[in-house]
Length: 358
Image 1 (cartoon, rainbow, N blue to C red):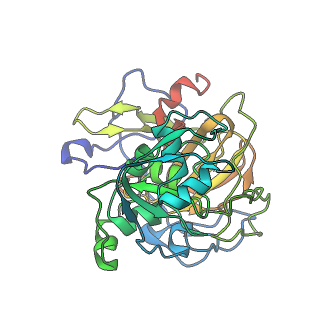
Image 2 (cartoon, rainbow, N blue to C red):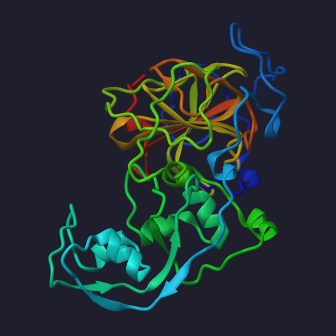
């Protein structure tokens, strides 16, 4: 989700009457409650110094996309054909021609497990191919070429679990050009889809992602790719008990909301909506302040924004209802609230269709 600029007309003061779901969408005008300074939740580990937006968090390594610098090494090749010889493999043909094995399979309509036979003539598609090195993330690769990662995902037909492999060649859109470090930093805008599809570091071809840990005291390194949960949640729970004041979809001023917004008092505990694995903890998504993203089985994801304190770590397994953050007014929030999203694959869905009625 890319958070747009809100118009002044949308900044209406809204009520905090707890537990009430308004009958009509949009803002619900009412006096705002006074805000108290953030306080640590009882029994939680000490927080580190504030990050952006005044959000406090447990100590954690830098995001995976900042742990390994990507060198723009893409090579351009022209379209050609290749006649399969005895003993050839698709990976070997890719290495010989400079194309990606997945791109060759797509160009020749080869279904998994991509069986080829001697004498078969294969089309080798043209393009610029970047060779993935260990630890590189999709986000970092996109930054190196100055192109949106979502375009690379589409160009390469990447799918779950979106974990790249060392030696893999991925197609870079033709108009993408390498940028300087300063240009990359100025152009970089992180969004939730980037994190979900390009946030995991590349691992060796035969390596398995690591299993989630259960304690925030054990911090997995940024270079570890985290295995996605395999169990699909049966039901989801509300992350907080508060007043729904903004619904999913287009708002009155034309901006789009990929989730719902729930008004709660400052430092209200935010619970995980279902069992899952923490995919991201930080303040890097514009407008959302303190953010926790949790992956669930079945390609489902939940997002929790505007937190004042972040109480979990990337790669941590969490249970339904477990406290993962405290509510706040970080980011573009004009009052204490929780931004809550649900996604199926890459598509935002209305959380109210999956949450129990209240």
